[in-house]
Length: 290
Image 1 (tube, one colour):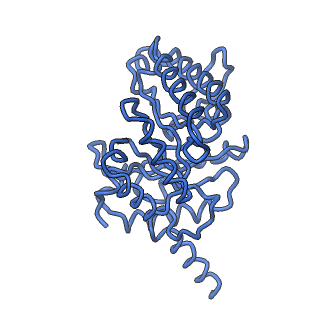
Image 2: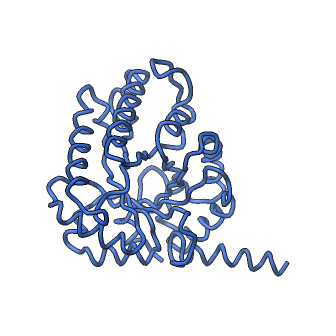
Image 3: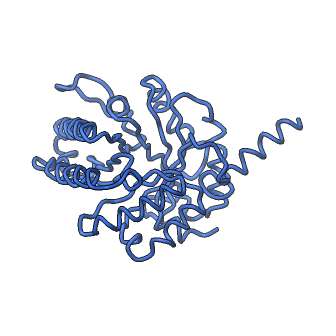
């Protein structure tokens, strides 16, 4: 019994400071977040880094805005890296699966190629993190099969471009991609499995406000990640939403969220495929009640 109590205490403490708590927690477990507003690192770089460090994060998905000077990105990445954080270039939009949407991907990858070539090793991005959400594109409702194929083509193009500049490719997917089937030139199967197989890692948007629901939502994807020896990060929401209170921890606050994430971690710790937790997102997390 004493050993069980101590084990539970260790798990609790590992999340007490945020997504993972103590800075001495295992490095291999992903503790991530999305930083959608890169102007935060323009206006308050030190404050932003302090928040990320307080939450004991080791991975940040940072939105790329080409209006921001590259010197700002270099400064932020160098300082964040010194705190043990890996920074991934974040971009994507539903319009990227439009007929000419690949041009947006090309612009991102061309920018990244130049950036990586002209930056020091301490200032480089560790990978690319795409958040496309093709189901929000109009074509999803009018011709889902065609839109899925275009999405797959985009991912394969991103994979090739990322590999060419030695960057890992990651993507966000909803939990229900395991219900979407495809049959086209990429073969036949389930979209969730295809995404896991063709990226280095996926972050599954398991937006629910209880551990039991989150654990259940990601079970199929966890098994698929193990099958392909890939990494699965479990994403949770902190922002206010009109889609239903059960989708976010906004109402409950940080203490309750941390408590539930301990349960999620405890359930999947040591499971092949499990990589860690990602909290969406910096802006709403900062203003979330304790």
